[in-house]
Structures are given as C-alpha cells and as structure tokens.
Length: 184
Image 1: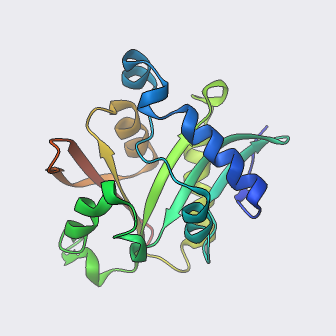
Image 2 (image 1 turned 60 degrees about the horizontal axis):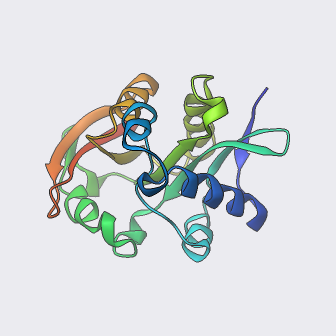
C-alpha cells in the first residue's frame, strides 16, 4: 500500500511543506495537537532543499499522494533554525553509549509527520526504516527532540526503537525530550 523512498524533486518538497503546514499548532485545535501530535517548525523551500542535500529526506507515498515524511537535518544546520538553536547547543555534550554525541557521526531527524488518513498504519515506522536503510552506512545514529506536549510522538519514537537520552527546558519554557536510535 505504501512506497518509501527519498524526496528527489521540488514537487516532493512542496507536498512536504503542505503536509507540514497542515499540522502546525496554529492550524489545528489544542485537542487535536494533544491527541494526534503536531510539528513545531515551519520550514521554507530553500531550507528544505538544503537539508535534502546530500542526504535526501524519507517519504511515504500511496500512489501520487504523500502519506508522510521524515526530514534529514545534518548538524551543520545548527544555527539556521532559531527554535532549534538551544537543542543544537547542548547536543554535542549529551552522552550516548558512554561517549558524548560529538564523538559520534550522527544526524538530527528534523521533523516527522504522517497525514491524518494514514496514521496508525505503520507509516511512521516505515519512514524510519527507510531512513535507516539508506543512511546507516553514513551515520551511527539519529537523534531528535520532541516536545513533552506531544506524547503521541514520544510513544511512536519509542516503539521504533528510540531511547530517551536527555530532557531539558528551553528559554521559552518548552520542555523537550531528546531521543536517539543507534544503528551501529
């Protein structure tokens, strides 16, 4: 039913942006955000394109329709997205399996989202498996942070195999759970 693979065209990225915008907290109710989850960052096309090179984002398709996506964000993007600066400032020092993250070759999963009609159908896990299959030769682990206001996402990440490695509160008072999934 679903086909997984890299985002390779601007048309793919435009579909990612449309799904992203539909799931921003400002575009959904508080109840929907609590029950279904939400995305935090509203990426522009230039940033999405840059993040997609050289390692492409993962996408799930049903026919021509985007069912979901997971974004690759290398650590070189640490200062580019203001809401993520606090995370990047502390990531390198967070320990993972006895060594600080800076001693690992890792990337940050920049955002994951599954379209409403396809939630609960394995798309979330499929996106991460595609990402692992394509990128595990280049990276030892993937790290991401999840707002504690998004328990659905925290549960879904743990189900895939992510482990909580750190928690912190940013300067605006948002509480974040940092999770990692080791591939090596």
